[in-house]
Length: 204
Image 1 (cartoon, one colour):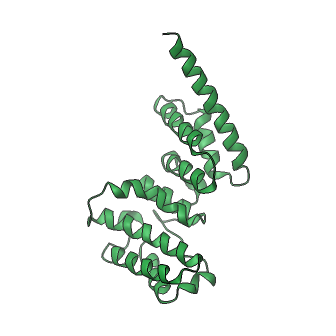
Image 2 (cartoon, one colour):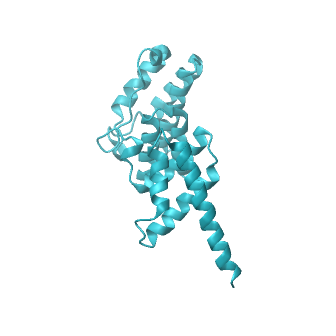
């Protein structure tokens, strides 16, 4: 769960408020309802949705989600799972009272493990979670990104720390300015790897 939390926090802190919940949702759906972990992710998902609604000037939706998110997060410890919750709860209270506040100041940042992580701060595991989420959010073909992630994970497990796929997955998440070029390189490398694997399979 740590990697999902960190990936979603970094995506959110980078300003991709809608996309952040995609880093959390699959894990959240597998949790037992009412557990602390489920309440944390449920609350964070509704928190990000409240921000999105407010930024879209859907005041009623923002207020409803802010109030609901506050309820989910209300009884959790201040630093549950190393997520700093008091600023989030305070922001949700303010948003519920005045959803237009997002037009006057940016939403509160998410703090995890003592810092507000950005995509460039992520280790490989949360980066691998963030890569297809950002691809989908930004309109890139997700399939080669997901394939590159799987190749990177396979190479890492095999001890190939210099894998080109590991580098490309990191670069895709971190490099805003050149992301389109990186996506093309990533897709090219995936295509070549798939072709090599297909050639090898054809020998047997």
